[in-house]
Length: 199
Image (cartoon, rainbow, N blue to C red; front, side):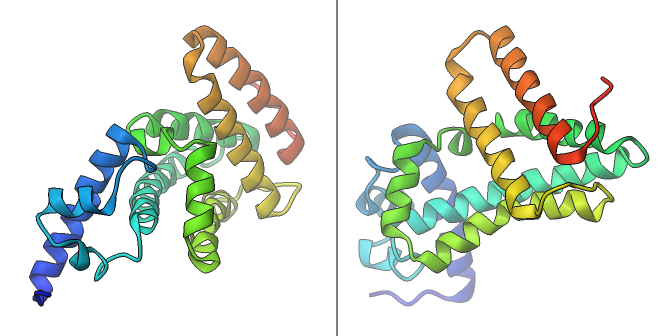
């Protein structure tokens, strides 16, 4: 098995992330094999395991990197909306998040089957690390002065449920998608902040 220098490890890891994303978006987590990934990156299958325990771990790394990019963009939204009512700021964050998600087909494509595969193959600790990232968005809102009636875990689950609903609606006409999400979001915002959005 070849030994990789530090620069080579960085290059291979970057290629794994890039090619993994391309393959997962094109064929789905279930159909992509470690052989497919290794071949595309031009490394031996055994070398893949120097970087990841399995393809599911690679998938989670890609998803987390994309979510981090989204959260970084949301920080900007929170800074720019300082001074506005909490309900309005939460709505701005979710609207921005929905728009940003469209830039990441891997995240949009996460469905029930993908979640089940990952849950079966990934260690509970790694799964917990991934799920905790949802709290980061809620914690960021709280850090920027938004007050919620419920604890961060509950608010995070509400947003994840809303996100899942948004994914289910992707096959519907845009007008229907927007109307359904607006109704759900307005109801959730009213419940978690105690304020009604005035817009």
